Image (tube, rainbow, N blue to C red; front, side):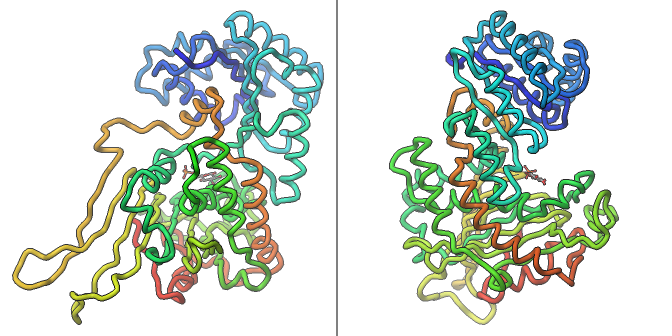
Length: 490
Ligand code: BG6
């Protein structure tokens, strides 16, 4: 086995992310033989838990999430817990001692992953202490994994980055964007660069527009406090949506190395047309959900949610037109759309090809549908190509046909959870599917201009879309003004 030995230290180990995603993902890796036997999982949290209390907690998480329960006990033997105060040096000394003991016991060669699965206001304090108190002073590798939000805007993200960089170099920092761990998001590059039929057409001469939708049915639920300071633009667009744009728009990297891929992505961010001031209204639409019905259940409006200001100006929906001003993409709109409390939970990319130069088959009854390449990110995973074929009858009538590949059903196995892949990459030291600071920087700079405009003007029409709908009417108008419409995604 080639997986390096490592200590995985999870800050925020009693929290929701650890329980729902991190423990189950590590266990899956363990079951698949992708973990070295020399590993330890050290949970760190404020609560005064014993090792056994923590092990019960991990056990509950694994029991609830895994079909195969056979190896749970042996996995749990690798777990330990330390209660901790993030701003107290003594607390870090205790942590270091325990880490060193585990290092001995499991022969971890001083390799350490520090995973900060907690509120970002503590990121800087923790990284300062990890260095000052000697936790990063080992003979093995040290890596830092951080969850979003990475800042609130460019200024706060830069400040945070500077602070973290005092203790960890850029190469040691793994910024999670869990969309980059999704199977079909990773597949975007493969579909583009491993198929002779797409890449020659992947430009403004053949593509009329690209649509990326990530819709959710859930509302903001119990996350009102966070969401009020965020909104859909910061929560989804700054990271996940723009990352998908970058993967769709990037030039082929000269090789599949981390640096080459990331630098091609950065070039896309650099080419994104900055939208500022009142111009924002021509390119971006914001929405906020009213009450309505989602999957047959009546639900309340955003403003009536827990910890939400009853006059809130926070957007729960964003649609926008992103223009990439480079040779390849001049004039091709990338339409993005994301929101809470929409009709379905789904993430899809639709690449719409231009109409053929002369349509021989057009008649008054029907025009030809354009060719579409649909990349299904979730819940189904696969690719569909929409073509036109002859209707089986007399004459030259055509009918739309679809060629589909469904990764989830044909490959027959559940594709691994995003976190499982990303954790594995981090253990192997592969940062390709994590966001580099340059990407974060450029995407904040793009998004800040939009939020500045939005925050300076109250959206009088809020709430402006019914829960269970596909967003406000203006989102459709955004495409209609260019002669397009959103392709159905249900
Ligand atoms: C997170 C956002 O980053 O992504 C959430 O903070 C959102 O608000 C989630 O619900 C969506 O992720 P997924 O994988 O369910 O599409």
